[in-house]
Length: 131
Image (tube, rainbow, N blue to C red; front, side, top):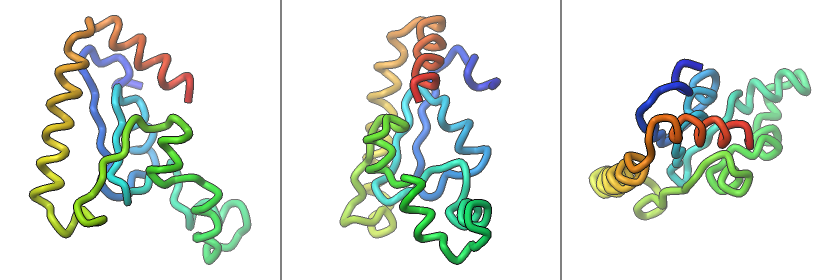
């Protein structure tokens, strides 16, 4: 709730597994990006399976239903962009992945700085409501 009223741009990048309460906070970002192999949800697949079926061993099935991949979340409008990972895995070239993220952060920051604080907050509010 506090983040939603910040008068400065909020850029979030999910680089691995974003879940639980932190996932909710990330969701209020003006721009939310994900690495192509990251996952993002408010609950882990194991937790979802335990609650829904009382069987955490069904985590893989739960993950499919939860739509927590970057591709799914982009299609659903939960995130704004998917960042392609070098050689299909960010760990294979951390420097290159860092450079991609740095360029993206600079570009988005310039774009968001063009908005005044009230416009930034209203856009953020509308984006979150649309989700």
